[in-house]
Amino acid sequence: MCRRRCAECRRTFTPAASAVATQRVCSAACRAARDRAQARGRRVRDLDGARLDERERQGACRKRLAAADCHAPASEAKEPRSREEVRRFVDLVLARSRATLQRDLLWICRRYAQFPGKGPSPVTLEPRLASGTDDE
Ligand SMILES: [Zn+2]
Image (cartoon, rainbow, N blue to C red; front, side, top):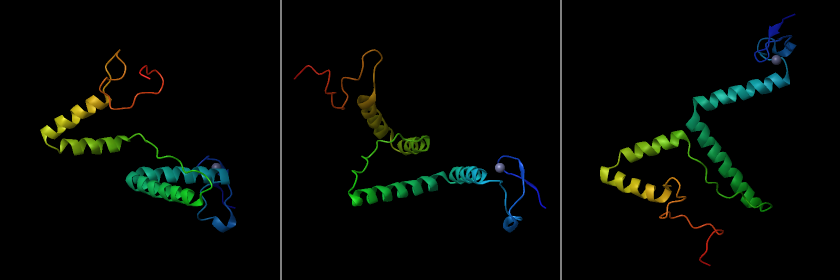
């Protein structure tokens, strides 16, 4: 009888007779944990490909939901940018001319800058909040 050590929990187990040569884990729980770990590894090795797959999968899901007409589809999320996307934006900006960079940075400062102790910048392009306005 063949005994083997589980790749996940490290306990010894007896592999199934049909999988003596290939079985690496002792139980369904360890199989699920190993599958998740391997999926994490695949995602890390091909992050851009994984993100592309997720975008396509999510887009197809949203189309199915919109076509099914039983639930309103989720609104378009304003997702935060990942570090990789920010790095790509920086590369794009650095490839531009100095004048273009200055113009874009000024626009960003006017749009997003907040000065300490003064709240939102007075030149922000964001609409005012409904509450707290006194010009009604
Ligand atoms: Zn195990």
